[in-house]
Image (cartoon, rainbow, N blue to C red; front, side):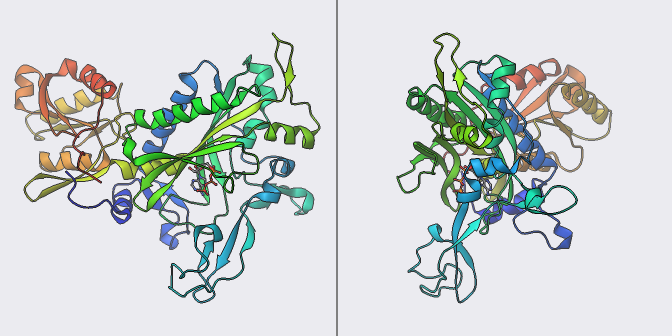
Length: 449
Ligand code: ATP
Protein backbone atom coordinates (compact mmCIF):
# COMPACT_ATOMS: atom_id res chain seq x y z
CA UNK A 1 0.00 0.00 0.00
CA UNK A 2 1.40 3.38 -0.94
CA UNK A 3 1.71 5.70 1.99
CA UNK A 4 2.76 8.86 0.24
CA UNK A 5 2.14 10.41 -3.12
CA UNK A 6 4.58 9.69 -5.88
CA UNK A 7 6.35 12.89 -6.67
CA UNK A 8 8.92 13.79 -9.23
CA UNK A 9 11.34 14.89 -6.51
CA UNK A 10 11.41 11.42 -5.05
CA UNK A 11 11.88 9.79 -8.43
CA UNK A 12 14.66 12.18 -9.44
CA UNK A 13 16.35 11.60 -6.11
CA UNK A 14 16.12 7.81 -6.37
CA UNK A 15 17.32 7.93 -9.98
CA UNK A 16 20.45 9.79 -8.87
CA UNK A 17 21.03 7.87 -5.64
CA UNK A 18 20.83 4.45 -7.26
CA UNK A 19 22.68 5.22 -10.49
CA UNK A 20 19.86 5.47 -13.03
CA UNK A 21 20.20 9.06 -14.27
CA UNK A 22 22.84 11.73 -13.63
CA UNK A 23 22.91 15.36 -14.69
CA UNK A 24 25.24 15.80 -17.67
CA UNK A 25 28.63 17.38 -16.82
CA UNK A 26 27.55 17.64 -13.21
CA UNK A 27 31.00 18.53 -11.85
CA UNK A 28 30.84 21.67 -14.03
CA UNK A 29 27.46 22.68 -12.71
CA UNK A 30 25.52 20.59 -15.21
CA UNK A 31 24.17 21.24 -18.69
CA UNK A 32 20.51 22.16 -18.81
CA UNK A 33 18.34 19.45 -20.22
CA UNK A 34 21.07 16.90 -20.91
CA UNK A 35 21.25 13.72 -18.84
CA UNK A 36 23.54 10.72 -18.53
CA UNK A 37 22.39 7.18 -17.85
CA UNK A 38 24.28 5.46 -15.04
CA UNK A 39 24.92 1.74 -14.46
CA UNK A 40 21.27 0.97 -13.63
CA UNK A 41 19.87 3.46 -16.16
CA UNK A 42 21.74 2.08 -19.13
CA UNK A 43 20.61 -1.46 -18.28
CA UNK A 44 17.02 -0.32 -17.97
CA UNK A 45 17.17 1.70 -21.20
CA UNK A 46 18.76 -1.18 -23.13
CA UNK A 47 16.13 -3.58 -21.85
CA UNK A 48 13.20 -1.32 -22.76
CA UNK A 49 14.73 -0.96 -26.18
CA UNK A 50 15.17 -4.73 -26.54
CA UNK A 51 11.61 -5.35 -25.35
CA UNK A 52 10.32 -2.94 -28.00
CA UNK A 53 12.61 -4.33 -30.71
CA UNK A 54 11.55 -7.91 -30.06
CA UNK A 55 7.91 -6.91 -30.02
CA UNK A 56 8.16 -4.91 -33.26
CA UNK A 57 10.55 -7.03 -35.34
CA UNK A 58 11.02 -10.58 -34.05
CA UNK A 59 7.34 -11.19 -33.37
CA UNK A 60 6.33 -10.12 -36.90
CA UNK A 61 7.13 -11.75 -40.25
CA UNK A 62 7.18 -8.52 -42.12
CA UNK A 63 9.06 -5.93 -40.08
CA UNK A 64 12.78 -5.46 -40.59
CA UNK A 65 15.29 -3.23 -38.81
CA UNK A 66 17.47 -0.32 -39.87
CA UNK A 67 20.12 1.90 -38.31
CA UNK A 68 20.52 5.08 -40.36
CA UNK A 69 23.08 7.84 -39.76
CA UNK A 70 22.19 10.80 -37.56
CA UNK A 71 23.52 13.24 -40.16
CA UNK A 72 21.75 13.21 -43.51
CA UNK A 73 21.76 15.17 -46.74
CA UNK A 74 20.34 18.64 -45.94
CA UNK A 75 17.75 18.31 -48.71
CA UNK A 76 16.11 15.55 -46.64
CA UNK A 77 14.95 18.19 -44.16
CA UNK A 78 13.67 20.48 -46.91
CA UNK A 79 11.67 17.60 -48.36
CA UNK A 80 10.35 16.55 -44.97
CA UNK A 81 9.12 20.06 -44.25
CA UNK A 82 11.32 20.51 -41.19
CA UNK A 83 13.29 23.48 -42.54
CA UNK A 84 10.06 25.29 -43.27
CA UNK A 85 7.68 24.04 -40.58
CA UNK A 86 9.56 22.61 -37.66
CA UNK A 87 9.22 25.36 -35.16
CA UNK A 88 7.37 26.16 -32.00
CA UNK A 89 5.92 29.61 -31.44
CA UNK A 90 7.58 30.99 -28.30
CA UNK A 91 6.72 33.87 -25.99
CA UNK A 92 8.75 35.51 -23.22
CA UNK A 93 7.34 36.99 -20.02
CA UNK A 94 8.32 40.66 -20.21
CA UNK A 95 8.70 40.80 -16.46
CA UNK A 96 10.82 37.75 -15.47
CA UNK A 97 12.02 36.79 -19.00
CA UNK A 98 10.88 33.17 -18.63
CA UNK A 99 10.20 31.58 -22.00
CA UNK A 100 7.20 29.40 -22.83
CA UNK A 101 5.70 27.60 -25.79
CA UNK A 102 2.80 29.82 -26.84
CA UNK A 103 0.56 26.78 -27.27
CA UNK A 104 1.28 25.62 -23.72
CA UNK A 105 0.01 28.68 -21.86
CA UNK A 106 -2.94 31.06 -21.97
CA UNK A 107 -1.49 34.41 -23.01
CA UNK A 108 -4.14 36.38 -21.11
CA UNK A 109 -3.36 34.67 -17.85
CA UNK A 110 -0.62 35.01 -15.24
CA UNK A 111 2.99 34.03 -16.02
CA UNK A 112 3.52 30.51 -14.54
CA UNK A 113 6.91 31.64 -13.14
CA UNK A 114 6.38 35.10 -11.64
CA UNK A 115 2.60 35.53 -11.69
CA UNK A 116 2.60 38.79 -13.71
CA UNK A 117 -0.63 38.93 -15.70
CA UNK A 118 -0.74 38.97 -19.49
CA UNK A 119 2.67 40.54 -20.14
CA UNK A 120 4.07 38.35 -22.86
CA UNK A 121 5.99 39.20 -26.04
CA UNK A 122 4.39 38.40 -29.38
CA UNK A 123 4.86 34.71 -30.27
CA UNK A 124 8.07 34.18 -32.29
CA UNK A 125 8.95 31.25 -34.49
CA UNK A 126 11.87 29.16 -33.42
CA UNK A 127 13.37 26.39 -35.54
CA UNK A 128 14.05 23.32 -33.45
CA UNK A 129 16.78 21.76 -35.58
CA UNK A 130 20.42 21.84 -34.47
CA UNK A 131 22.55 23.06 -37.32
CA UNK A 132 26.26 22.49 -37.86
CA UNK A 133 28.77 22.39 -40.70
CA UNK A 134 30.44 19.42 -42.30
CA UNK A 135 33.92 19.93 -43.72
CA UNK A 136 36.69 22.46 -43.08
CA UNK A 137 35.02 25.64 -44.37
CA UNK A 138 31.64 26.65 -42.98
CA UNK A 139 29.40 27.89 -45.79
CA UNK A 140 25.77 27.64 -46.85
CA UNK A 141 26.68 24.49 -48.79
CA UNK A 142 28.21 22.73 -45.80
CA UNK A 143 25.18 22.90 -43.49
CA UNK A 144 24.07 19.65 -41.94
CA UNK A 145 21.45 19.10 -39.27
CA UNK A 146 21.32 16.70 -36.37
CA UNK A 147 18.20 14.69 -37.18
CA UNK A 148 15.15 15.85 -35.22
CA UNK A 149 13.45 12.45 -35.73
CA UNK A 150 14.57 9.02 -36.86
CA UNK A 151 11.69 8.58 -39.33
CA UNK A 152 13.32 10.25 -42.36
CA UNK A 153 16.23 7.76 -42.30
CA UNK A 154 13.62 5.06 -42.86
CA UNK A 155 11.82 6.87 -45.71
CA UNK A 156 14.96 7.56 -47.71
CA UNK A 157 16.02 3.92 -47.35
CA UNK A 158 12.65 2.41 -48.18
CA UNK A 159 13.65 1.51 -51.75
CA UNK A 160 16.94 -0.03 -50.58
CA UNK A 161 15.03 -2.22 -48.15
CA UNK A 162 12.47 -3.29 -50.77
CA UNK A 163 15.21 -4.17 -53.24
CA UNK A 164 17.43 -6.06 -50.82
CA UNK A 165 15.25 -7.84 -48.28
CA UNK A 166 12.37 -9.24 -50.35
CA UNK A 167 9.73 -7.63 -48.15
CA UNK A 168 6.36 -7.13 -49.80
CA UNK A 169 3.73 -4.56 -48.95
CA UNK A 170 2.41 -4.44 -46.28
CA UNK A 171 5.71 -4.32 -44.37
CA UNK A 172 7.42 -2.27 -41.71
CA UNK A 173 10.87 -0.85 -40.97
CA UNK A 174 11.88 -0.34 -37.33
CA UNK A 175 14.62 1.88 -35.99
CA UNK A 176 15.88 3.05 -32.60
CA UNK A 177 18.21 5.98 -32.32
CA UNK A 178 19.10 9.42 -31.11
CA UNK A 179 17.24 12.52 -32.19
CA UNK A 180 17.93 16.15 -31.36
CA UNK A 181 15.63 19.15 -30.94
CA UNK A 182 16.61 22.54 -29.69
CA UNK A 183 13.76 22.58 -27.21
CA UNK A 184 13.54 25.89 -25.41
CA UNK A 185 11.33 24.71 -22.64
CA UNK A 186 12.89 21.63 -21.11
CA UNK A 187 11.57 20.52 -17.78
CA UNK A 188 10.33 17.54 -15.86
CA UNK A 189 13.65 15.73 -15.70
CA UNK A 190 14.19 13.53 -18.79
CA UNK A 191 10.65 14.04 -20.16
CA UNK A 192 11.65 16.70 -22.71
CA UNK A 193 15.32 17.03 -23.54
CA UNK A 194 17.37 18.36 -26.43
CA UNK A 195 19.04 14.99 -27.03
CA UNK A 196 16.77 11.97 -26.73
CA UNK A 197 16.09 8.57 -28.22
CA UNK A 198 13.18 7.39 -30.30
CA UNK A 199 11.82 3.96 -31.16
CA UNK A 200 10.00 4.22 -34.46
CA UNK A 201 8.32 1.76 -36.77
CA UNK A 202 7.07 2.91 -40.15
CA UNK A 203 4.58 0.59 -41.82
CA UNK A 204 4.15 0.78 -45.62
CA UNK A 205 0.71 -0.07 -46.98
CA UNK A 206 -1.36 0.13 -50.11
CA UNK A 207 -3.47 3.32 -50.26
CA UNK A 208 -6.97 2.34 -49.17
CA UNK A 209 -5.62 -0.16 -46.63
CA UNK A 210 -4.32 2.67 -44.46
CA UNK A 211 -7.32 3.19 -42.17
CA UNK A 212 -7.63 -0.45 -41.16
CA UNK A 213 -3.87 -0.71 -40.63
CA UNK A 214 -3.90 2.47 -38.58
CA UNK A 215 -6.52 1.00 -36.23
CA UNK A 216 -4.58 -2.25 -36.02
CA UNK A 217 -1.38 -0.49 -34.89
CA UNK A 218 -3.25 1.79 -32.55
CA UNK A 219 -4.57 -1.21 -30.63
CA UNK A 220 -1.33 -3.16 -30.93
CA UNK A 221 0.71 -0.32 -29.47
CA UNK A 222 -1.59 0.04 -26.48
CA UNK A 223 -1.42 -3.73 -25.89
CA UNK A 224 2.38 -3.45 -25.86
CA UNK A 225 2.28 -1.28 -22.74
CA UNK A 226 0.08 -3.86 -21.05
CA UNK A 227 2.70 -6.51 -21.87
CA UNK A 228 5.37 -4.22 -20.45
CA UNK A 229 3.48 -4.34 -17.15
CA UNK A 230 2.32 -0.72 -17.16
CA UNK A 231 -0.89 0.05 -15.21
CA UNK A 232 -3.47 0.46 -17.93
CA UNK A 233 -5.53 2.99 -15.97
CA UNK A 234 -2.55 5.34 -16.35
CA UNK A 235 -2.73 5.24 -20.15
CA UNK A 236 -5.21 6.61 -22.65
CA UNK A 237 -5.53 7.72 -26.26
CA UNK A 238 -5.72 11.34 -27.26
CA UNK A 239 -6.91 11.96 -30.80
CA UNK A 240 -5.49 15.02 -32.54
CA UNK A 241 -8.17 17.53 -33.42
CA UNK A 242 -8.06 19.42 -36.74
CA UNK A 243 -5.92 22.21 -35.23
CA UNK A 244 -3.37 19.76 -33.79
CA UNK A 245 -2.84 17.52 -36.82
CA UNK A 246 0.66 17.79 -38.30
CA UNK A 247 0.85 19.09 -41.85
CA UNK A 248 1.35 15.58 -43.21
CA UNK A 249 -1.16 13.63 -41.13
CA UNK A 250 -4.58 12.27 -42.08
CA UNK A 251 -5.28 10.94 -38.59
CA UNK A 252 -3.24 10.87 -35.39
CA UNK A 253 -3.55 9.52 -31.88
CA UNK A 254 -1.17 9.99 -29.01
CA UNK A 255 -0.82 7.43 -26.28
CA UNK A 256 -0.66 9.51 -23.13
CA UNK A 257 0.54 8.48 -19.67
CA UNK A 258 -0.49 10.12 -16.44
CA UNK A 259 2.88 11.36 -15.17
CA UNK A 260 3.08 12.98 -11.70
CA UNK A 261 2.93 16.31 -13.63
CA UNK A 262 -0.16 15.37 -15.66
CA UNK A 263 -1.28 13.45 -18.76
CA UNK A 264 1.45 13.73 -21.40
CA UNK A 265 2.36 12.18 -24.73
CA UNK A 266 4.39 9.01 -24.70
CA UNK A 267 3.97 7.86 -28.26
CA UNK A 268 2.39 9.11 -31.48
CA UNK A 269 0.55 6.93 -34.00
CA UNK A 270 0.13 8.77 -37.28
CA UNK A 271 -1.37 8.12 -40.66
CA UNK A 272 1.20 10.04 -42.73
CA UNK A 273 -0.41 9.15 -46.08
CA UNK A 274 1.92 9.26 -49.12
CA UNK A 275 3.20 12.69 -48.08
CA UNK A 276 6.74 11.64 -47.17
CA UNK A 277 7.51 9.45 -50.15
CA UNK A 278 5.96 11.95 -52.57
CA UNK A 279 8.06 14.74 -51.13
CA UNK A 280 11.27 12.70 -51.25
CA UNK A 281 10.48 11.67 -54.77
CA UNK A 282 9.94 15.30 -55.75
CA UNK A 283 13.10 16.60 -54.03
CA UNK A 284 15.42 13.73 -55.02
CA UNK A 285 13.85 13.23 -58.48
CA UNK A 286 13.87 9.48 -57.86
CA UNK A 287 10.99 7.15 -58.50
CA UNK A 288 9.75 5.93 -55.13
CA UNK A 289 6.72 4.06 -56.36
CA UNK A 290 6.16 0.44 -55.41
CA UNK A 291 5.35 -2.26 -57.94
CA UNK A 292 2.99 -4.94 -56.73
CA UNK A 293 4.40 -8.05 -58.50
CA UNK A 294 1.11 -9.92 -58.47
CA UNK A 295 -1.39 -7.28 -59.53
CA UNK A 296 1.20 -5.29 -61.53
CA UNK A 297 -0.16 -2.17 -59.87
CA UNK A 298 2.22 0.67 -59.20
CA UNK A 299 1.59 3.11 -56.35
CA UNK A 300 3.20 5.34 -53.75
CA UNK A 301 2.70 3.57 -50.40
CA UNK A 302 0.93 5.15 -47.48
CA UNK A 303 2.82 5.16 -44.21
CA UNK A 304 1.47 4.38 -40.75
CA UNK A 305 3.94 5.55 -38.15
CA UNK A 306 4.33 4.48 -34.53
CA UNK A 307 6.80 6.78 -32.82
CA UNK A 308 7.69 6.35 -29.15
CA UNK A 309 10.30 8.08 -27.03
CA UNK A 310 12.80 5.65 -25.48
CA UNK A 311 14.13 8.05 -22.87
CA UNK A 312 10.59 9.26 -22.20
CA UNK A 313 9.50 5.62 -21.83
CA UNK A 314 12.23 5.16 -19.24
CA UNK A 315 10.80 8.04 -17.22
CA UNK A 316 7.31 6.58 -17.59
CA UNK A 317 8.53 3.14 -16.45
CA UNK A 318 10.24 4.70 -13.41
CA UNK A 319 7.10 6.66 -12.46
CA UNK A 320 4.87 3.66 -12.97
CA UNK A 321 7.11 1.27 -11.03
CA UNK A 322 7.79 3.57 -8.08
CA UNK A 323 6.03 2.86 -4.83
CA UNK A 324 6.41 3.31 -1.13
CA UNK A 325 4.77 0.53 0.82
CA UNK A 326 4.13 0.20 4.52
CA UNK A 327 5.21 -3.39 5.02
CA UNK A 328 4.90 -3.38 8.82
CA UNK A 329 3.78 -0.69 11.19
CA UNK A 330 6.07 2.30 10.69
CA UNK A 331 8.24 0.34 8.27
CA UNK A 332 8.12 1.78 4.76
CA UNK A 333 9.98 0.29 1.84
CA UNK A 334 10.72 2.03 -1.44
CA UNK A 335 10.29 -0.39 -4.31
CA UNK A 336 10.39 -0.31 -8.10
CA UNK A 337 7.90 -2.80 -9.54
CA UNK A 338 9.64 -3.20 -12.91
CA UNK A 339 8.49 -5.98 -15.17
CA UNK A 340 11.19 -8.66 -14.63
CA UNK A 341 12.13 -8.52 -18.30
CA UNK A 342 13.28 -4.92 -18.04
CA UNK A 343 14.65 -4.87 -14.48
CA UNK A 344 18.37 -3.91 -14.58
CA UNK A 345 19.25 -6.82 -12.28
CA UNK A 346 17.18 -10.01 -12.41
CA UNK A 347 18.57 -11.97 -9.45
CA UNK A 348 20.30 -10.86 -6.25
CA UNK A 349 22.38 -13.57 -4.59
CA UNK A 350 23.32 -13.37 -0.91
CA UNK A 351 25.09 -15.61 1.59
CA UNK A 352 23.38 -15.24 4.97
CA UNK A 353 26.81 -14.77 6.55
CA UNK A 354 30.29 -14.60 5.02
CA UNK A 355 31.84 -17.38 7.11
CA UNK A 356 31.65 -21.18 7.20
CA UNK A 357 31.90 -21.52 3.43
CA UNK A 358 28.57 -19.79 2.75
CA UNK A 359 30.05 -16.97 0.65
CA UNK A 360 31.97 -19.48 -1.51
CA UNK A 361 28.80 -21.49 -2.03
CA UNK A 362 26.77 -18.36 -2.83
CA UNK A 363 29.40 -17.17 -5.32
CA UNK A 364 29.34 -20.56 -7.03
CA UNK A 365 25.54 -20.40 -7.38
CA UNK A 366 25.76 -16.83 -8.66
CA UNK A 367 28.31 -17.78 -11.33
CA UNK A 368 26.00 -20.50 -12.60
CA UNK A 369 22.98 -18.18 -12.68
CA UNK A 370 24.99 -15.60 -14.64
CA UNK A 371 24.76 -17.80 -17.69
CA UNK A 372 21.02 -17.07 -17.85
CA UNK A 373 20.41 -13.88 -15.86
CA UNK A 374 21.93 -10.57 -14.84
CA UNK A 375 22.91 -11.18 -11.23
CA UNK A 376 24.15 -9.12 -8.32
CA UNK A 377 26.20 -10.61 -5.49
CA UNK A 378 25.95 -8.87 -2.12
CA UNK A 379 27.35 -10.09 1.18
CA UNK A 380 27.43 -6.91 3.23
CA UNK A 381 25.01 -5.83 5.92
CA UNK A 382 21.93 -7.43 7.44
CA UNK A 383 19.93 -9.62 5.06
CA UNK A 384 16.84 -7.41 5.40
CA UNK A 385 18.84 -4.38 4.29
CA UNK A 386 20.20 -6.28 1.32
CA UNK A 387 16.65 -7.11 0.23
CA UNK A 388 15.63 -3.47 0.56
CA UNK A 389 18.60 -2.34 -1.54
CA UNK A 390 17.44 -4.65 -4.32
CA UNK A 391 13.81 -3.50 -3.92
CA UNK A 392 14.96 0.05 -4.57
CA UNK A 393 16.51 -0.85 -7.93
CA UNK A 394 13.63 -3.15 -8.82
CA UNK A 395 15.36 -6.58 -8.66
CA UNK A 396 12.46 -9.05 -8.88
CA UNK A 397 14.14 -12.12 -7.32
CA UNK A 398 16.66 -12.69 -4.52
CA UNK A 399 18.33 -15.94 -3.50
CA UNK A 400 19.71 -16.45 0.00
CA UNK A 401 22.16 -19.19 0.88
CA UNK A 402 22.21 -20.26 4.55
CA UNK A 403 23.38 -23.16 6.74
CA UNK A 404 20.51 -25.35 5.60
CA UNK A 405 21.80 -24.99 2.01
CA UNK A 406 24.91 -26.93 3.02
CA UNK A 407 22.78 -29.73 4.41
CA UNK A 408 19.99 -30.19 1.91
CA UNK A 409 21.04 -28.11 -1.15
CA UNK A 410 18.05 -25.77 -0.93
CA UNK A 411 17.96 -21.95 -0.93
CA UNK A 412 15.45 -19.23 -0.12
CA UNK A 413 13.87 -17.46 -3.10
CA UNK A 414 12.31 -14.13 -2.23
CA UNK A 415 9.86 -12.36 -4.54
CA UNK A 416 10.14 -8.57 -4.70
CA UNK A 417 6.47 -7.65 -5.10
CA UNK A 418 4.84 -9.95 -2.55
CA UNK A 419 7.99 -10.30 -0.37
CA UNK A 420 7.01 -13.97 -0.16
CA UNK A 421 9.85 -16.40 0.52
CA UNK A 422 9.93 -20.02 -0.59
CA UNK A 423 12.45 -22.81 -0.21
CA UNK A 424 13.62 -24.47 -3.45
CA UNK A 425 16.45 -26.82 -4.49
CA UNK A 426 19.55 -25.18 -6.04
CA UNK A 427 18.93 -27.27 -9.17
CA UNK A 428 15.52 -25.59 -9.68
CA UNK A 429 16.48 -21.92 -9.23
CA UNK A 430 16.94 -21.12 -12.88
CA UNK A 431 13.75 -22.85 -14.08
CA UNK A 432 11.67 -21.34 -11.25
CA UNK A 433 12.82 -17.83 -12.15
CA UNK A 434 12.20 -18.43 -15.84
CA UNK A 435 8.63 -19.51 -15.12
CA UNK A 436 8.03 -16.60 -12.74
CA UNK A 437 9.26 -14.13 -15.37
CA UNK A 438 6.94 -15.59 -17.97
CA UNK A 439 3.90 -15.54 -15.69
CA UNK A 440 4.68 -12.22 -14.01
CA UNK A 441 1.74 -10.17 -12.78
CA UNK A 442 2.40 -7.15 -10.68
CA UNK A 443 1.10 -7.34 -7.10
CA UNK A 444 1.27 -5.19 -4.01
CA UNK A 445 0.44 -1.84 -5.57
CA UNK A 446 -3.34 -1.89 -5.70
CA UNK A 447 -3.71 1.15 -3.47
CA UNK A 448 -0.86 3.16 -4.92
CA UNK A 449 -1.28 6.31 -6.93
P1 ATP B 1 5.76 17.00 -27.99
O1 ATP B 1 4.39 17.49 -28.38
O2 ATP B 1 5.86 16.40 -26.60
O3 ATP B 1 6.88 17.96 -28.30
P2 ATP B 1 5.90 15.66 -30.51
O4 ATP B 1 4.44 15.49 -30.81
O5 ATP B 1 6.68 16.72 -31.14
O6 ATP B 1 6.08 15.75 -28.92
P3 ATP B 1 6.83 13.47 -32.03
O7 ATP B 1 7.51 14.31 -33.01
O8 ATP B 1 5.57 12.77 -32.42
O9 ATP B 1 6.61 14.28 -30.68
O10 ATP B 1 7.89 12.42 -31.48
C1 ATP B 1 7.54 11.10 -31.12
C2 ATP B 1 7.93 10.77 -29.70
O11 ATP B 1 9.29 11.16 -29.44
C3 ATP B 1 7.12 11.52 -28.65
O12 ATP B 1 5.91 10.86 -28.39
C4 ATP B 1 8.05 11.49 -27.45
O13 ATP B 1 7.93 10.27 -26.74
C5 ATP B 1 9.43 11.55 -28.08
N1 ATP B 1 9.95 12.92 -28.00
C6 ATP B 1 9.70 13.96 -28.83
N2 ATP B 1 10.37 15.06 -28.45
C7 ATP B 1 11.08 14.71 -27.34
C8 ATP B 1 11.97 15.42 -26.49
N3 ATP B 1 12.31 16.67 -26.71
N4 ATP B 1 12.50 14.75 -25.44
C9 ATP B 1 12.20 13.45 -25.21
N5 ATP B 1 11.37 12.74 -25.98
C10 ATP B 1 10.82 13.35 -27.05
